[in-house]
Image 1 (cartoon, rainbow, N blue to C red):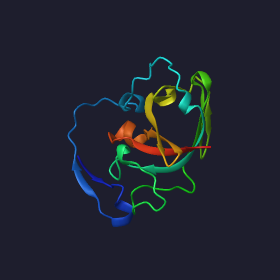
Image 2: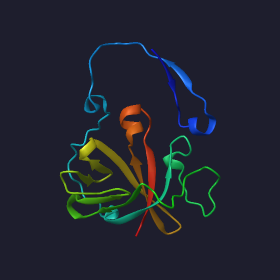
Image 3: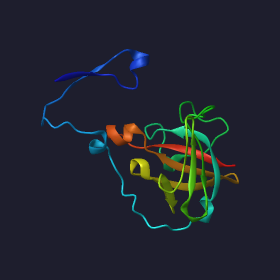
Image 4: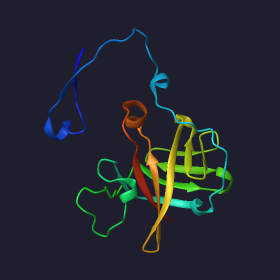
Length: 168
């Protein structure tokens, strides 16, 4: 089968890429069967530094900037990262004991049955993703850099992208 693939550039360029696919079986897979899943069975380890409310500062893809290279600038290089005026992932609050609440544009997710955290990971139980995080300090400000494992990661095999949060 030949598929005309419309990449992320399609709206801008109008160009497609022809991809040849070979049939391997006739099984009708569910989304759950094909989704990429992480090991979320991690013991709780406290992390006093992460406790509190964090709001989105910016977002970046690994092709634009490596997580290790993130340094906040007042005037960032063009295209280095995306400062968002209305981000999809708006904020996250990490509370004592591994509890957390995440605020998105269209919902608020709370409850240990949906997600928890442990040192270095936000454990999203509803989609079996362990999103690694780290805190960096620049100019006296703390920045939480957290993996964002979207559908492109879960179903498309892409690398995770990153949200950068600042402490409120």
